[in-house]
Amino acid sequence: MSAIASTEARRTTGWVVVETIRGYGVDTVFGIPGTHNLELYRPLDALGIRPVTTRHEQGAGYAADGWSLQTGLPGVVITTSGPGLLNALSAAGTAYCESRPMIIIAPGPARGAEFADVGTLHETKDQLAAASAIVEWGRRVQTAAEAVAAVHDAFELFAARRPRPVYIEIPLDLLEAEADVPADALAPRAGAPATRPDAESVATAARLLAGAREPVVLAGGGSRGAAAELRALAERLSAPVITTLNGKGVLDERHPLAIGSSLRLAAGRSRAQEADVLLVVGSKLGEAELWVDRLAARGTVIRIDLLDSQIAKNQHADLGIVADARPALAAILDALEQHPVDAAEAQKRSERAEASVAETVARVRAESAELSAQNTALAEHIAAALPERAVVATDSSQIAYWGLLNTLRVSEPNSTPYMATYATLGYGLPAALGARIAAPDRPAFVVVGDGALMFSMQEFITVVEQRLDVTVIVVDNGGYAEIKQNEADAGIAPVGVDLVQPDWAAVATAFGGTGRRASDAQQLAAAVEAAGAEGGLQLIHIDQAAYAYDSGEARR
Image (cartoon, rainbow, N blue to C red; front, side):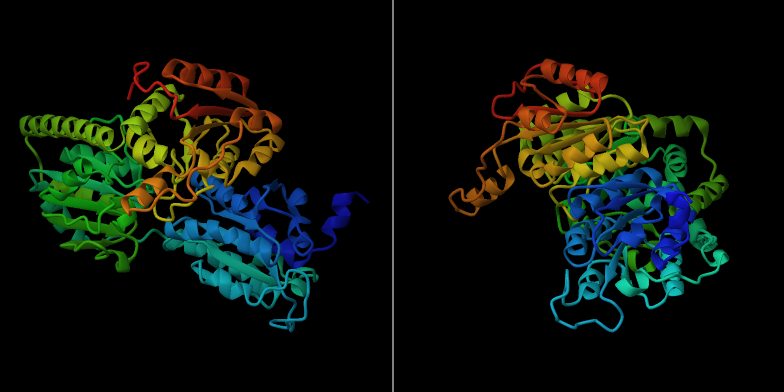
């Protein structure tokens, strides 16, 4: 009997849980094998699932998120009990804040051993409560059937409601026990149909938008599945489109109506505020995206969101449409057929809108340069060097939020894995490796600061082990420069922010990759090209203090 055949004979609860997940199309899981979670690893090979072993569970969660953004499926994270689970909770917090689907599965104390406090391995006071405080829901199952049902419930959540992480805890004795669950109970369930909009609200929205002189569309993360409809509506209305960071790329940012993801800058934000009709699609308009307390839109506000609870959040709505973005935008487009526009007038509106977009983009660039000249100039050089269709993951680093996310123009959503609200460090590298596994046809890049990269540099070896092509551009400003400035603004002498740096190029080489250095635009472009040609783990180190910012001619 083969090893796989003998393994298949033990259809444990762990097996049926993983088999249920596989039925929904998930072919990759992230995590670290441990003493208590082996029954979740037993079936992976037989079920055709690729296990990716990161070197920290936090990295497993971020890699799962990067994978999820490219596939549209939930990232699946397997941890062991206690420390393994708790290590992954920063990633769960990220997925919760950014509304992304994730399933975290971990073993828990055996049934009847809860709160025993007797010193068992990985004993944790209440890991279910710890995880449940972070995720959308946490569930400790008591039978194999309940475990399978929890998986189905998770996919129902992701399909029909706001996608957020869930946690499934399987008691250790149950995880290892034979499971008597009929095969048909494992089969994927049909997702709930998309929530369709109210016809009267659609007609009102169409009338308001048709009558607008200066309409603007503000697209958030909830619009990412409706890119075609959003573009068609923007073109029909000659409406400029500005996005949140989670919505970046939902309209090709080279489109003449695309302002980009610059809500954090007054020049971009004011374009939305001054619209006579503002259509907000799938965004809670939070402070982390706006960098101010409120958007304070002055015109009529129409909001489309999957949840009624979001319609008035952070910004009053004159008209709320509770529906999935795609059918809602499609319905509004159809309703606009009742409001024909003269061809000559439509052309004038289009020309006026495109001119206003170009002016806004120029003002955004000028404001960005005024706020952070070095990061803006460097970001333009990086953007000019990157290949087409690259996935560019970033951390909460100055080079990202002061520079690259304003400068880089992407053509499709989910091209810049980021976490605007949770704003963590250590996200970019594992997110990029997850994205590369999910989308091997897209070049994978990481652009982060030195402080951020130190949070996840152990995942260099995961990139090497998984034989991935990932290029890391580390912008070295000597430590936590943003916090250093915060200290100065508060009248505090620098403390804990000036960090000793390794030889970054040598570090990459030590991990089995290739390290390079760039001190001007020409060297940077050459290094990016060489990295792409060579493949594998590549690192390009930029010493920000020594970089020639006025070198080269960047393209947008």
